[in-house]
Length: 178
Ligand SMILES: *[C@@H]1O[C@H](CO)[C@@H](O)[C@H](O)[C@H]1NC(C)=O
Ligand SMILES: *[C@@H]1O[C@H](CO)[C@@H](O)[C@H](O)[C@H]1NC(C)=O
Image (cartoon, rainbow, N blue to C red; front, side, top):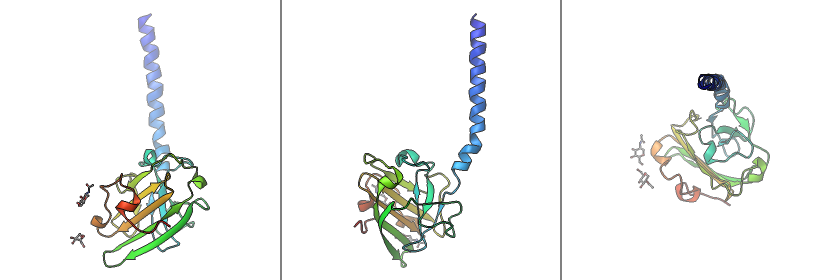
């Protein structure tokens, strides 16, 4: 009796293991479209959870780029932002330091984000594989509870601080949130 039970357990384990190995191609498909670009006040991308209603922090490894328009150069396979998700935005260029920044308000309901989601930070380390075309670093904070977002793309990594992820947009990047 004991022997056949452990055999049964062994075959369940085999089934589980084989389904894990088949899951890998699905994960890499989900990870595509992780390159963003900031071209102008109207043509840019931010990172969001891949699924409608996703939690910002829980999606930090799998978030993908969503852009204001389809097929922006420098953002291959990125998705298009839900209509009305960006409620306001303010574009800043610091040509002396070599960074660009967008700050503003979101309408979380347009992507089903939760009013209880305190948000989080995305940068080159998470989403894994993320890139910002034309820049060496980026930092983005998204705060569904406050309905604000901010993103900065930097030539010089020291202008994109990633060590204050819990401080929120206004303390990390400053800028206009009206
Ligand atoms: C990057 O910024 C830091 C701090 O402002 C500065 O000391 C450094 O020289 C800059 N590096 C480059 C390559 O501009
Ligand atoms: C983040 O890093 C900067 C530059 O190294 C440093 O000045 C600052 O104190 C750090 N902040 C925190 C909260 O660790």
